[in-house]
Image (cartoon, rainbow, N blue to C red; front, top):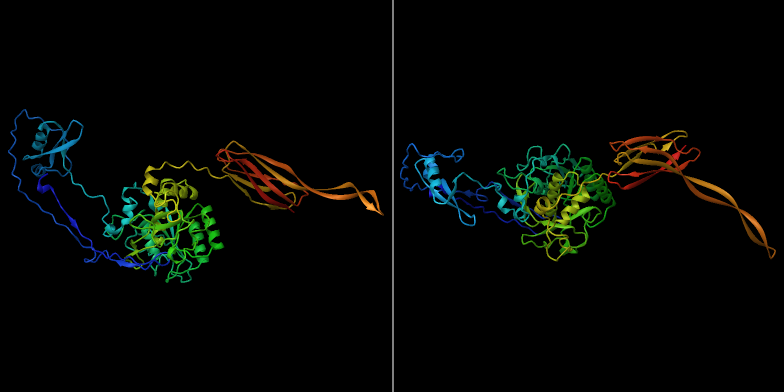
Length: 545
């Protein structure tokens, strides 16, 4: 192609690395500027050399064939004179080469391309641009390259999927979030400072949120793994970056109540907390995957961190730009998976950008990938999502699972592009005994849901049976063995079927059953088959009178 069709551009970006040492779950931020000319100056140079000599005019006559090649919009005769038209020539193995032709008019150039020996078609050049994001700090984001984020399939409904950032708050007004993307209306503040979820005087939470869902391709700041994903800001760390486990537990419960599909916890401490365990269990039961930073204390005792080590939590370690475990990242059996966490550039609480290192930065990378998976597989529950993330992870360091990186580096491309879809999730059969305590001769209401349609559900009561029997025995009296009897109390139970309920097509039905009268305490037993064919049984304590 001639020089007038060629364009060259040089982009220079001079930014300080801003990497700092390790501390809590994220370290001191190094500010990064996306607007100062000295920090991110882009220069483009284009050269046009119109030195091509015009091609001899084609001789046209009444027998000249017509062209059938489609002409893209915006292509003109001037393009024909500059080599925009090429003949497609295939060799013996089908490998194409492109022979440029020039002519005074576009029509004549197409005809000449058709006449090129071996021509198998005509190509007309059209403008092409890079599909990489135009965010000024994107070249600094090595982690997105390592995770192959730019090759992930596009989704249009990310704003419908909610990721909770339980942290120091999130600056919802940051330029790299879309209006309304950070759900200030659903946020909360459990620090006692009463600033609300969308305030972040510390900055850490905004950094975490940017890793999850900062806008990409908007010409500002950074790109992210799941751009545009809705963020639920839950503030549990104060302006100094500190908080308590009970406040964090309250934040987890709040996030679950507001419908978060993924809850990110880039925080932790050395002590196990019953409040955290209970909150995580509640959130998991509500369908949320809880993801937590594994900790930054390998060099300072390597103690187990919570909530990362709490049951049901996906614990995330950090890797560096070389694909190795970060030297600060906790190493131990609690680690499930790893993600980039060294020198991560993201949004900051004062509206600027900063680079941080820590497992705090690794956890939201996994949370973002989990959110993308939930968007693609909305029926998948927390256990299915966690399993999918772990089984598709890219092995690092020691073969198989290891204490530094767990199953390996999270691999969104393998998870979302190469991995098979999960098996359809069968909802668990549910039983609700609305009135487990009733007066005499009062019916008990039982609600059933997600049982197999057209099946039969048995509702029965197990009641205690107390009997007294005389038992013949012998005793010693005055040195002699003599026959005797004694009364023995025997406690058994019996089962009384109260009803057989036919399940309708909806899988849900309500039944009223009369418990056994004259018995104060019993156990109501519901037994049936769920939608997947599994036999289920639920037992509820019952009291009459």
